[in-house]
Image (cartoon, rainbow, N blue to C red):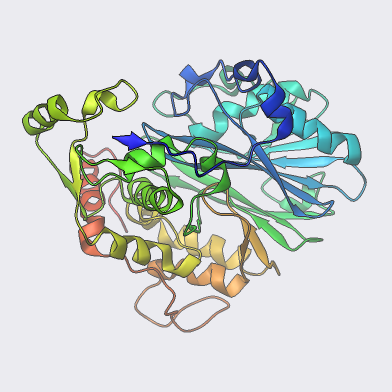
Amino acid sequence: MIKTTGNVKAKIDPQRQSDGNRSRDWSWPYWPAAPLYPYGQRRTICREVVKGKIWIFEQLQGILYVIIPVRMTLIKLMSGGLLVYAPVAPTRECIRMVKEVISQHGEIKYIILPTASGIEHKVFAGPFAKRFPQAQVFVSPSQWTFPINLPLSWLGLSNRQTQVLPSDSATAPFAEEFDYAILGPIDLGLGSFEEVAVFHRRSRTLLVTDSLVSIPLTPPEILQLDPYPMLFHARDNGFDVVEDTPAIRRKGWQRMALFALYFRPGALEVIGTKQSFQEACQAPDRSKKAYFGLFPAQWQPDWQRSFATIRQGGNLIVAPILQTLIFNREPETVLNWVDLVAQWNFRRIIPAHLDAPVLSTPRQFNQAFDFLQPKSPKRGLFAGRSKASASFPEADLNFLHQCDQFLCDRGITPPPK
């Protein structure tokens, strides 16, 4: 059971507090195209990263109550106007915030969809572009959609407004200010993985989508607007009763991060279906919001050690899911992309998920991919293996390895190289 004491208050924009029709302001009617939490009601927050130059817009996404931030970035162009990287859901609230930036810095000129396979990004690109029909839309080259490969028009992207990013970034219309490098496509059997990293020279900022993340110790601000998912996961079992405090929110957030990055971390003991339903009948909270008391798992005491290992002190990491299921399919392709990106003189990275911005150098970016390096001396710009290279416990990786073996045994995905 969860007890809300009211001693923690989320930071809410005053205009939203006074809006009598907030559900309409946050409404996202197209959520069935990608049925991810929070479904049809999406809140948005905006933060200025570099004064007068870069803004990030954050919403939430997840499965059930395992949720993380999803992020769009706006960058001011020297000639006036804005470039958008990885659009989010264009709710009334989101568009109002975007137009506040537009009113001071000019119209949106370019929109980049930087991924080929990430439906959680692709589903927003068309509706967002329709709100700004004067903008040019650029998509990563090898577009596909899982589980059905849909044409761009089905995602709401018109042929008139949309074009594929040129393979050579020097030929793009925004080449005067930006470089970009395309990772992939990496063959995954059912489709491909592809991502576009974009470098803004003037602010020395690198934009990435899924390839790198940094895990904050405390819950991101966007999660504070609705703490229930954090409180739900702060429980050790279905009978646990928690109160809404900063420490409990932090505990729930850290466990959600473990779920999101491992699917099933080693510290999580899954209980049987029969036992789960029996315990649900006796749970103190059997409401619909609490999934009728179902809590088919128990956390082991060493879960904090798993979080400390995955967090890596706040350093950039490649998520375990990408390490075990995607990047190891074509390590040479990934490392060639890493070598190219590491040539740029960036000082901060803005990923599309989890924490941002992250202060980082090209060397630190390079080090995050050390798991792909052969045992022989390291190639590329930075020689010598890094102690910061992520090494995750086998107990936490076990479920992902099982998934990998299942997919390979049935010929669904190619084996790792």
